[in-house]
Length: 295
Image 1: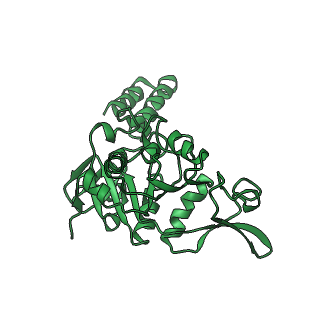
Image 2: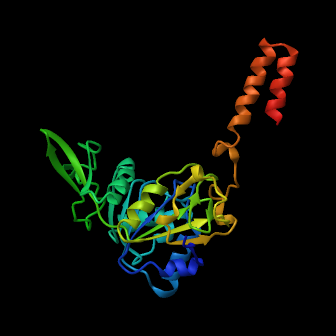
């Protein structure tokens, strides 16, 4: 089995070309691929490239402080942004308000489905979600400013019912965050707050002929990961970057907390069971339950 390519953040940034469509993972302050986005921002500020990118994301990313989506908030770096939640990236928002970029706001859940439909080579995502709202082309089709002209949403009629067709498009590069990766590229997200869209995003990019680049906390020996924990199979992964400890924090500025992953849930459940046992059972049963809790 072929081993995955392990590269530096700078090498990852060089894989993004002018005019590419790039999708980034993350949910507000969680699971953001900060090492990758920071490296791409640094390259642009130093060289002026890559330029004219299309940035595609579902959930907003960042702390409104230059992190997350704000790494892309430079005039000339992006020409178009398609996002489900803009609040976390005020620099991008300022570019949109000043007509410096083409800007779309589509329903966040629809974008999550778009990843799956792009992966399946479907013509787009067909849904009732967005009808008679800002996403409906009769109400602007998600366009946020005057320079945004292309219609990405279309009204279709299926079996006598109105639906919206959100048009699909290829993804050239995807930046994702995972926890551990084995030497064959299999990635887990067991230390993240959830799997989010990482599987579908990797599939969408790979099936578009693009490059899947994953930031991880550490590389482990092949075959040592529990297969049930793998969220991004190695067949989808082109390159892996090991991030710094700070940039791999579970949430921006916050160290790992097992309560957010479910790791601590079993102890919490047993503790509650022990309190129930204290009220209703014999001392022997209580002792047995407490031993289970502490083991």
